Image 1 (cartoon, one colour):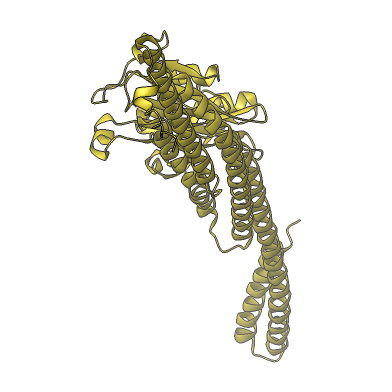
Image 2 (cartoon, rainbow, N blue to C red):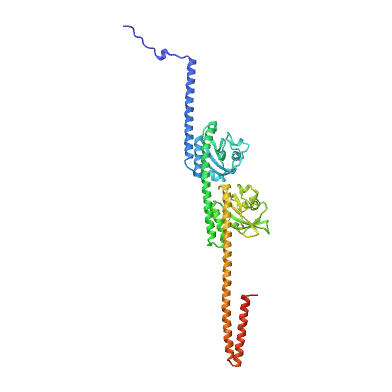
Length: 444
């Protein structure tokens, strides 16, 4: 039998030089690193898909923005996340996550779109910073605000329109936010922008419907005749506060005979105590609305000289909207302005509210004018009916007086001289009474 040859063992028959072994180890390490990177990338892409599906799950704006900031924070591993909704170049809504309620309460008012946030509004493009304080537009943080250094912000765009900005600060991993974080957040912001656009369209449509329904109901109430004249303006303001979700409302009138003074004829809500007050019109929001003959929007009342008087009387006011009234409730010789206020922490008035309030005020003042006209016509009709009644009664009274006079004259002809003279004197008195009645009712 031939001799059996044992196969060589791998360790004995396959050997690597030290250099080759080192190169293989490096290749294996690179392969593992690449596999880990691919796995991490796949995980983050799945996170992006999950976040996109999550934020597009509904169209209610308040719920939507909350879902967006929560998904954003989880997607890029941020400690803090926020979303600012922008309208007409102004920050109108700001939602954030990451800070506890006690900290938020100590900080006070929410951001108003200044500093770095304002820079993103003015220049809507991705901004990534290692330290917020190094940016030229940085204005620092208010007292009690937690420290924030690493920052990443991207705009929410849809159809070329900027609907807001996404912000994240303070990463939970070392090295700050990366280019991959920026790409992920930009992709998420694209989906969020479309979702916010749709939610805003739906919310605006609902707001328009709400305004129109309130306007129609107000007109019916004013034209029903159930309200006394002195309650009409108050009813208008109460309705405006409710439908506009405003802090307060007031109507100021400026008489042509005294154009330098504005009188508050009615007020409601948080500014109800303004009623009956007067103030100068020079440089005021009231005068601006009259001069421009259109809506005036003030996003930050404390920083606008036109609303200095408003803030002096109501320091809590932040946003102001004023519209001129087409027909003045005060009648000829006066011009009026309807003003709404919102306090700090509430959504800033926007162009939609300005448009809706202008139409609402036009319908309301027209209804007031019609109601007043109807009351005037009814008063004239009542007067005419009263005059007709007086005429009718006067004719009847005169006829009766004449009959009594004739009867007394006939009796006097058959009486003795003393009684005849007395009866004729009474007849003369009746003639004087008839003449006085006739002259009063039928003046020459």
